[in-house]
Image 1 (cartoon, helix red, strand yellow):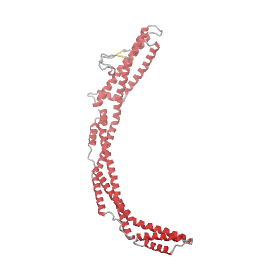
Image 2 (cartoon, rainbow, N blue to C red):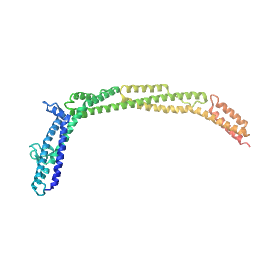
Image 3 (cartoon, rainbow, N blue to C red):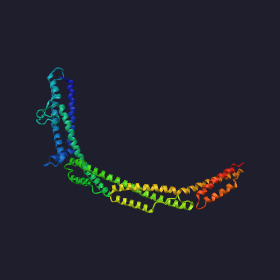
Image 4 (cartoon, rainbow, N blue to C red):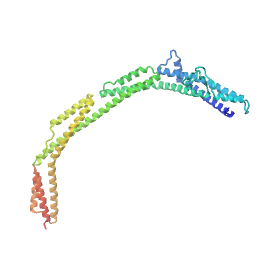
Length: 412
């Protein structure tokens, strides 16, 4: 004997508490409305349940019914242990056989199950139920706990499915319908995924009561993946559409900018032709026919996109961009060329004005410019403020005036 009388008393008390909790939990499971509902459907002839739910519930309810049988066996074992302990009395050494028997019942294979009833979890791979029909209270309780968890899980899952399936089916069908609308707005061909998903939803809707677990499984494994696949395709199409819309908006902005720059080039050339004498460096703007061709090409790309051929449109936009960038380089060079003579004239005017201010400052200090300098100033100003201006002559006069002014200032 390895347990003392006090330890045996404690073990029996623990088992009584355990049995009280086990009984309370089994009663609570029995009283669950979903459990009662499932028992009624399973007992119908033929059973009202079908498919996955029938398979899962049949096993779960059979295990739950077996739990009560095992509970009675456990209770009997504890009672036998208690009786053996009582026969030993409370004086150490008196009827030691009763203590040994109590310990044997509490810790050893003291519970005999009906042949073929040994819990599956307790069997070895090569053992039969008959070979292992004796089990310890603890081993039986462990098997009961697993069976209870499995039975409760099935009941709770079925109950949750009954409560939410109708709404779940409606929500997923609504999502499928919304995806159909988005696909239609994009001009996509009907997606097989959506059609198949909605068909499966309709087929399974009538089976919510008989096979809620099977319907939930269908939604999870056969419907939701189709919805996800369709959504990915539609999301990709929407991103592509947004990309094309942005690309077309940018392209329209680019052609507008090119036309504006070309108009500026024309205006600068006309202005320079009026204001400067030498027009050999002026550059002609882009041919209007070229700009019209670019606009027509862009319109064709837009039509391609609107017809649903978005990938072709994206390719077209990339080619169009490459073409127009070269024309931007050309027009920028032309603008610079046509602006240069006007800027040169303004620069010469600025230099002349600065020299004039310098001359006035020195004149106030009794150092007036020479008559030669004043003559050169007057001629340079006349040239720079007349049309068309001979820039070469004006540049030479400004340089001569600057030299004459500096010579005047340097005079003693």
